Amino acid sequence: MTTSSAQATAQIGRVETAGPTPISSEKLTMSAQDKQSEGKEMLAATWTGKKSVTVVKVPVPRITDPHDVIIKVTATAICGSDLHLYHGVMPGMQKGDQLGHEFMGIVEEVGPAVKTLKRGDRVVEAFDIACGSCSFCSEKLFSECDTTNPSADMEQMYGDRIAAFHGYSHLTGGVSGGQSEYARCHHGDVNLLKVPDSLTDMQVVLLSDILPTAWHATEMGEVRKGDVVAIWGAGPVGILAAMCSRHRGAARIILIDTVPHRLDFALSKLPYLEVIDASKHDVYTRLRELVKEGPHVSIEAVGFHYTKSLVSKVEMMVGLQTDPPDMLNEMIVSTRKGGRISIVGAYAGFTNHFHIGAFMEKNLGMRGGQTPVQKYWHYLLSCIEKGELDPSQVITHTLPLSQAAEGYKMFDNKEEGCIKVVLLPHE
Image (cartoon, rainbow, N blue to C red; front, side):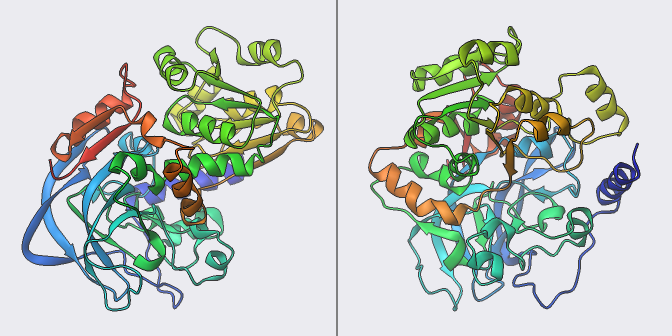
């Protein structure tokens, strides 16, 4: 193990065992901790350990900051990145943390400094909590907001803090999630998008994260008219990235996965797709049979759960790396010389055996990052209104919030027919 790897492992271990290290900074613009309404309770899905989600009664949140908004949650999705929390591999989780970062609802109460929202407005909440006024927000890099995440551990691990996220560990701020009957939304004027009553919850709830994430994948990959795009991962983000690539004019889109029923589902919704079943074919060989020079753009929409080689599996087991390089290396060798690689699957730690030689010698470009939801959601909402994009196509299951544990299990097991689960808190 290299010194840097050892330091990263030690730092991640410290976060997992010791919990968050809060910092005091004049730059912080919000408090992560909810103030609670006396005597009023609600249901919320909480993390209670590895593969353990428990719905419990907790106090209803109330206004803490003048810029806060309280919403009655009407729909809240389980995201693929929530499975990292579910498996206990994301540092900074504590038992009892409220889950959920993809949600929407109806405004119940607004703080005195909120200018654009009122009680009764129907809104979608961005998973990335931005202040709207720091230098990064002014550049529309909302997911890199400099003022909302108090985690010193994040700064020590990455050199900087990124924005706080709802319901996604104390590494990203320890903010309560939205898999609950009510939620407190910070900086409401920045992080809530009003949506029209003409659209259903299922059409707009994914504006909170995975539709902007899919669009961000195509932005970072600079998908252009006539491009051949290969997408690793036929989950919700991968399928939406295919829709977005088509919208941008891609000539061919090739979807890759190891789960046949996911590929079948994607084809049933998007018949223009070509697919590769990676459980039956070597991906590089099959891609080059389909596209002699390789795809112009390769999009990674799976994340750090994917291990292929024995070396990666062993190193993951013994803690020599946190994020395997297998898929990234597969993308590097498969992508056309001079092509672009875009990474939106969640990576959190470090990797070994990265194929840097092939990456350099092939003149590839690579970008990755959390989507700045607020940068894209107005345009994407207009696409939904015009019928150009329909993210509801990936939603296969709706369950009452009380069945959140079943929803997580179903999604995690990739049960046949299950692509995306949305929880309904008031049913």
